[in-house]
Image (cartoon, rainbow, N blue to C red; front, side):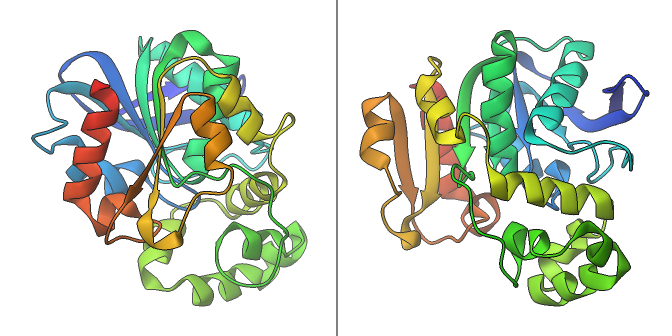
Length: 254
């Protein structure tokens, strides 16, 4: 395990690193997840192995520190991730980023362009959503922070089920709530707009079962490859690892 200071206060981001050739590949998890658990099988798959790979946990989640004073906006997440990657000597990396991690990756590529050479977004959040009771970021954001910390997190635990909670419970409660709130609000400019403005190769993977991606025509017109993956849900890399590895390898070779 490696680590680097990611904030002026010295809060540390940690990652599991696999040795290999450059350019580096950086795997970034979604809300309440952890990259080593979600991406280990993919990073060592024969189609993807052989590159220096950082399975990195965003601040507040997994094996990284969970500071309570951090605001956990998308910009703050991206800047902290940038600080860690700079410390690790990473530049021009290929980012494979899931869900909220994909949103952070878009902001990272916008604010710190020298760190990113390619983006593979895995069912990433591109649009604001309205907070509402239930699982996921919308459910978490439907609580005030005070109510979430006082026990609302238990309702989320019961709604998401044991699989997601097995990694979500590793995150700080403040990190979960603030990250969810800012994720549901989206970015300014909107993440979808930022994605169309980027000039590096970009691929968006989504479950085939969810139907066509909203606004796919505009993304494709801006050079974003939109690739549906069969036989999977939101956690594509876990549900169909073979198809995921093949799609990521194709995206990185294009």
